[in-house]
Image (cartoon, rainbow, N blue to C red):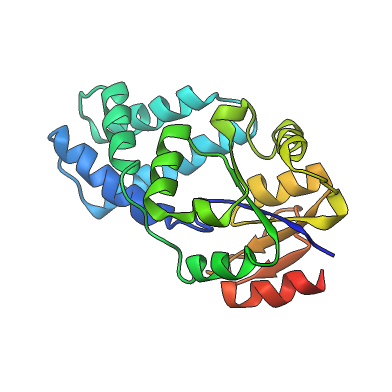
Length: 228
């Protein structure tokens, strides 16, 4: 019987792609860099690649933040400071929030039955700003952010820290829900807990990382967890 639910934040509760796009457009505009959909899409691709390298331990967090802009600026041929771009972007990203469809409704239902915890690979300043803006703190027992912990998902050290802070914690009563196969699902498997892959777009899983369960919408989640 599940009692503890770990929830990813970006693209599970919050629509990170929407927030990212808006923050990026504002940042590039402040740097007097013209944008189009091609540039915005390329940034997203580069950003995702850099975060994968972080998960693999090949880059640290600061390198990810700066490298993504350096790579983008080199590609589009602009002479601007990647560090300045990072600072402006993060300031923009920390303001406001955008929920994934039915995510807040899901939180309202789950917190009445389960102990909820946020488990995020994001930056402290950004995630805390968005969490405060959204008002979701009232639904969760605690918030675990990798930058503050010093380890990232899927590393077992991240999860061991989380587990040490959860009262009366038991692995067989815990599940993690998230959109990332390589971060949330692999991390849950590394930690020995049940995993639920949030996959609203029906993306094909070509990896050898197999989630215990898969959902396309939050309407499924309450009945699923009650059966685990």
